[in-house]
Length: 154
Image 1 (cartoon, one colour):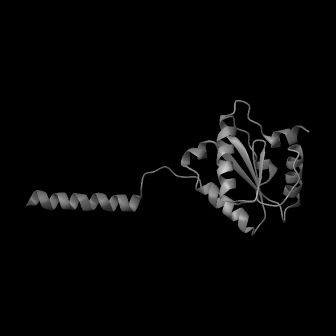
Image 2 (cartoon, helix red, strand yellow):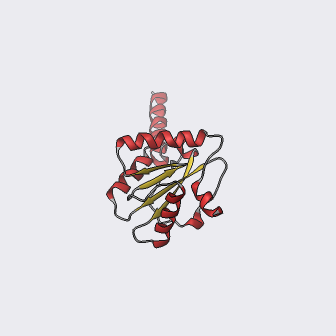
Image 3 (spheres, helix red, strand yellow):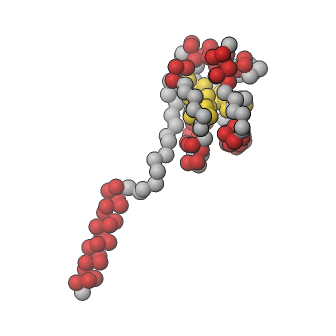
């Protein structure tokens, strides 16, 4: 009888500790639309840089950032996301035009996501699948292309 009560108390204590501490899965990166500047951009050999130009209050931009948050955790090791608001920030708007010019693209609205040398305008489920594929391909590439590095050299 004492062993049964001790076992129940032990189980309750373990469940309480798990509940208070929470699950032990690793922290997942929560991507957000935050105004960054070109000075924030860092170049790491292990990760590729993905550039996200957005408009403050744009619902399609929110959809895309929500999609990026659903990527499997392994993608957190593949890339760093740089988000730059372009509707109200003239410098970021100029940067977007410069980056797109390097890629022989014309600005056609937001969201505008750049992965390697690929540009994605807008968001849909189909575009989401293409983005996921592009991130994986760019990450696996032996010669990663970073358009912002090209802009800095010019």
